[in-house]
Image (cartoon, rainbow, N blue to C red; front, side, top):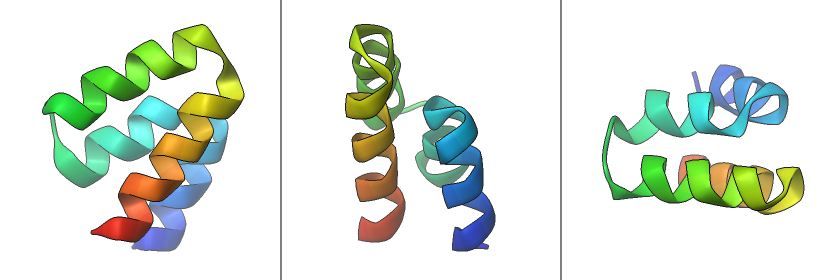
Amino acid sequence: MDVIRIILAIILPPVGVLMQVGLGMHFWLNIVLTLCGYIPGLVHAVWVIAKK
């Protein structure tokens, strides 16, 4: 299941985080990071998915 989340995180980082942790702090942080730039949002999404 983590592989699917990582693939979704590559396409759209907040979706992968949403599937992993729901509408928590990490999701909103990822939205902000993705708006600042795709790469920070992607790195954060992969980190959140790999951490759990």
